[in-house]
Length: 147
Image (cartoon, rainbow, N blue to C red; front, side):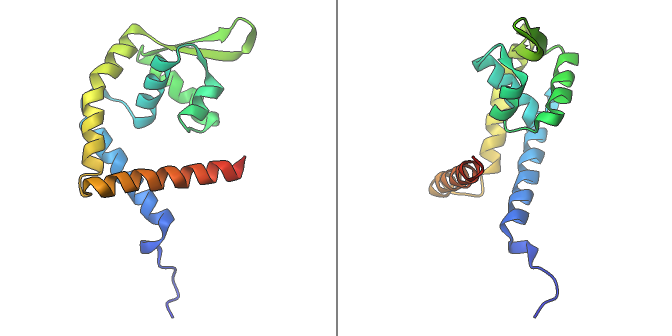
């Protein structure tokens, strides 16, 4: 019996490796924009819901609220996001994309779409659909269990 754990077949290890590949491909395809996957998700979420509060938005893009503020800060420095205190509650921060941020996010759509295609390119169409369903089920199952 082996002394070590066979991590090469462990779901956690495989998911981590898949995530590494996904980020690497995303960064290659969007290299001209100097953006991370989370920053792109934030810009897109804010285009759909301008004026969203920072805590709600961090949950929507599934990012740690403790470090979310620093990501928003980097987007502010780029001139892509505007943050201001909620007039009804000064502790609550509301967010909007700037015209420049929206323009850049729209310009990135093609590169991000290409990245998504490259990520699943080793799979056939049925496998891609199955992977999407299984990942969604895995995430939903854990989110529901945490509630």
